[in-house]
Length: 472
Image (cartoon, rainbow, N blue to C red; front, side, top):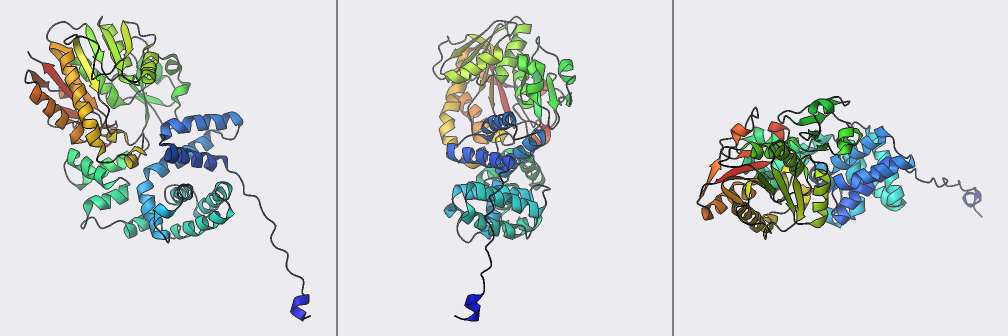
């Protein structure tokens, strides 16, 4: 026996169980739900956080980090995919989706947060060991160490094409939007590079929580008494909560006297309510009322004038949400489940009609960042017939002299002006009302008569509104 064979072997390192980090496991679970079930993060994350708090796994600071990891990863997914594609030795479509989710969480910690690089890599590798196993954790470790060699600016310089060679692709990679969305938003916005970059950057910012004090039921003064509350920018009923403000902790919200509602949504309802009418002002209709934010504000405004609101929503479960939002309204109202393209009411029954139509949701990418990766250009073809049918219903439902508000949470021209122009060709007995004077103090509303709100200019979702009056 040789001398070497008689030497005692060194004992191997004892196996160390991975540490379970509740914050990152929760963030991973949320991303998997978004990926596997086409869920929306704003619907998936709150119950996960609530359950973790009840178990004592998270405190407020942990919940804030988990929220940032989920939303930040989703917002920057396009940018991070371009970086990972440069660091992985095969196409990303060949990487298992759970592995890609762990990698994306790690990249966001490295490039999108202040977490030190060594801590970001270490924590992500531990997460990989827990949810993927030790073998794939080694792959995660190797890839993230490559990512850590550059900061975000360095990576963008490397993976984004130069602006002068391909402006849309450059903006798509740098600001993490699909190229077709960049093109559509740029067409709608007009102007040069600065405006579109400001818009895309605004889409990647976390939106403030905005409350509405429903008239006759709550006041802004009451809401401003809450911690971290400041006045809204444009709506007289709006109050904003600074970062970390919890609307569930506000008594008026719990009671239904106030609600969470983007200020752009409030402005649409207010403009319709204040549009000039010829004749009586007694019957109002919200023809696509779910989930009930605009309907609740309209019902409260109608009650102040002695008018009644009919809130119609096709989906029964969403009609239930509308009924919950309107519960306790001081004036008369009714909620029904009905198809807006086959309405059960008589033509010419209403003085004011709001039709906030289903759309691609490109105006709410701040709140639903995953929507930008799910939508396709062909989705516009699916929405187009429904949007036109609903606007025709609205024009049939309003009396002569009454006003229709056509609204959508999308700035895409195919969902806004194109719909209004096409339908009005069939209804020559209509005229457009200039909506700009009905939004006093709100700047940069364009040439009119319709209005388009923007995240970077108004701090709201990109809501569109056209007001149409029946003249004969």
